[in-house]
Length: 326
Figure: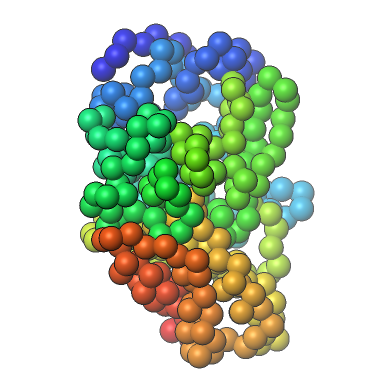
């Protein structure tokens, strides 16, 4: 591990000042410390922000929910407000990582986590995300777990977060505080597809700090849930996943929010599936027909063609469960 300095801050102003000087924020440390051990990350200064007052879960004035950036994954999953209003978030969190990691990792850190692509973590392999311009070993390598949606010729790595898929489905936004003040960015704009600059993964400005993730109010009653398909039931990243939220009134689907994980370079919203559902009555035929739209635009690699069919089946199954016809 490369040498680094460490400071712990107790207030927001101190954190922002350290961030402005180039310090790297750390809280749970479940990802960054691993990457430092493997020499993938080499920050010169760590700024411990774990004491900052960003650990509240609150209902917003408009009926949405705001989750502080430093709320632990386990705390968020078990929080009564989260379970009551957006059980899809609790499910996604509880299907993530291990209990030990969920007790340490934070909501802000989870959406900032970097890919689990083996070539990214192998400092002897070519990786444009780790070292721009070096190439992408995954393109011609073993790419069974890689992306079929949103990839470029520069990077085919997936985004690993489960809860970010639920946030994407619910059209959450990320609140940030930095030298230029506060701002809010839709998650869809916060997490960046690789394009020609895969090393740039989030739209965070220098010195900015994530303060919260906010889920907007959605019509009630809202049925929602998260389904994850992986090689192993626990402590494994998704091959495919589906986050679904439906508002059904008078026997008709009035709102549909659907996103997929394990298949995209970012959590992948599925607008074509949503459009096919809205205005229709729940039925087995509707779920199957809508799910056929899930892989629109997919570009499989040598070893992950199976993800196209698996994604469609995952979305169909979760629509059936959430829609109440399972």
